[in-house]
Amino acid sequence: MNEIKIFSPASIANVSCGFDVLGLCLDSVGDEMIFRKTQKKGIFITKIEGAELPYETNKNVAGVSAQAVYDSVEVDFGIEIEIYKKIKAGSGIGSSSASASGSAFGVNEILGRPYSLQELVPYAMKGEELASGSLHADNVAPVLLGGCTLIRSYTPLDVLKIPVPSELYATIIHPHIEVKTKDARKILKPTVTLKNAIQQWGNVGAFVSGMYTNDYELIARSLEDVVVEPIRSILIPKFKDLIDLAKKSGGLGGGISGSGPSVFALNQGKENAEKVKESWNEFYKNVGISYDIYVTKINEEGIKIL
Amino acid sequence: MNEIKIFSPASIANVSCGFDVLGLCLDSVGDEMIFRKTQKKGIFITKIEGAELPYETNKNVAGVSAQAVYDSVEVDFGIEIEIYKKIKAGSGIGSSSASASGSAFGVNEILGRPYSLQELVPYAMKGEELASGSLHADNVAPVLLGGCTLIRSYTPLDVLKIPVPSELYATIIHPHIEVKTKDARKILKPTVTLKNAIQQWGNVGAFVSGMYTNDYELIARSLEDVVVEPIRSILIPKFKDLIDLAKKSGGLGGGISGSGPSVFALNQGKENAEKVKESWNEFYKNVGISYDIYVTKINEEGIKIL
Image 1 (cartoon, chains in turn red, yellow):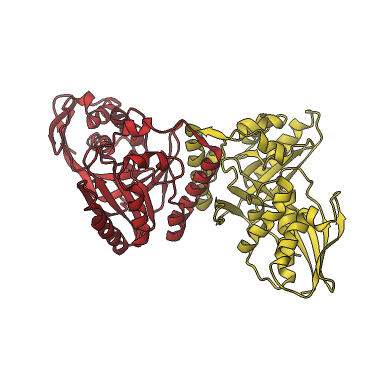
Image 2: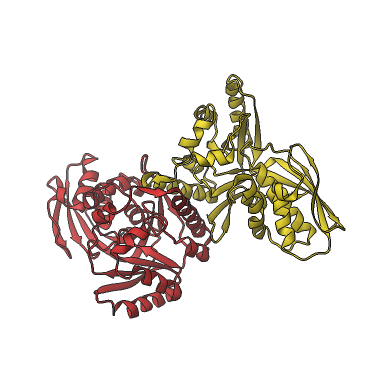
């Protein structure tokens, strides 16, 4: 394969109760990237549209992941990469993960697919590390594997795929304020009460159960975060109103997407997702902050060649 | 129905990663109880064999649960209860829960079944409270509902049933030392590190996933408790050796049953469970503490009329 174009989707990390372990892959929003074999050895970013990002491989999230995959095998050619960013940086729906996963995936394809999608996760994590300062996989795993993923363990890395009910849609609102992942990590407390931790792992278990049984009511009840959301939500204007509105408008519940500022609601069916979108739109247009809202199916397929 | 005899099984609470939320119902060990309609109104414990327990209804775990169910409906008769304790008190396999669940279940049957098994959980919890000093459901839920249960939430009470792979067997060793539930609770720290909490809820989610998919290897990997076991295991002589031995002898892994001192291993198939039993027997007979060991299937049916 000499050239491919890929779609690398956005994602929701944490998914309310599952801080640092759960992730969902989105459908309608994602970056596009082109990978092309070159005679000159190495990884070269030749075009970036849609964002102001460095072209130096080792300073670019996509570059770092691409280089890591490339360096792990012996070949006599190089790869150039064109990046068409569609996901806004710092929006909380995995912009850096789409870049990191996309380049790991694309380079793997050009190299003749030496790795499985599962095996690409640690390579994508290296790019993610450049963006967030820590090795985490809760965005890159759903992008690469599609659907819903759960990180059981980081050492050793153990990533599971959890089934997704066929009618699961997300509504996402992105208030145009800046919340840096690094800052959102810094305000977290290093300890949690045992009581809250128990409630959280009860909810994670219940969420997984709800996903296996298509039990939307159970998914709704388990979308509860007593550990991180009470702290991080203060960075997001009108967070509580958005969640209350989502529930009142037919949504199952929601939370902060990744480290924010995007807020997500999960819904049974597209119609409910659109109702939540409408109610958020009505409400947020008077808040005084610009924003965008969209509805997306949960994407079982994940990253793909176009 | 004027008289019934029931079997109220033992259970494993916590199940390693799921402190205070997961529970498993056991098969071969359990109490027997007889419930008999009487003309005189009230709840009367008329016989107790196998343990030194008070006959006063309000001081007896079974009495408290029985009374709670009885008081919630209007009837013109009473119920007498005979208790045949087979589960040793303080062994960590839900002795008090068998009493509490058994009496709630038996009284409900004599009353003409006003409540579903799910609805009996809070009544059984009242008896459990007398024994442990706190309202918890991780033993009574699996006894009443059978199989594996997960407590998503206590307020409101939200109990789920999780499917059990058909070949799941437990090996249990009960070293004859005393660990009181109240004491085992007291030594727990009121906070946990966020890092450990994340690892724990990753494991709970993975355990649930493994149960749905009959993935014994995943169940094995998720049987990890980084929060409670490091503290409580110091109360159990040779705990770590037992777990290491179980894994080496073909078991999936294990942990402390409830608050101990019993230790459990989960296994794929009866043969592996017997191998673990054998290895524990060989090892523990030289430790200098008397003990008993047994193998039991995970009991999907739960409490039942004999």
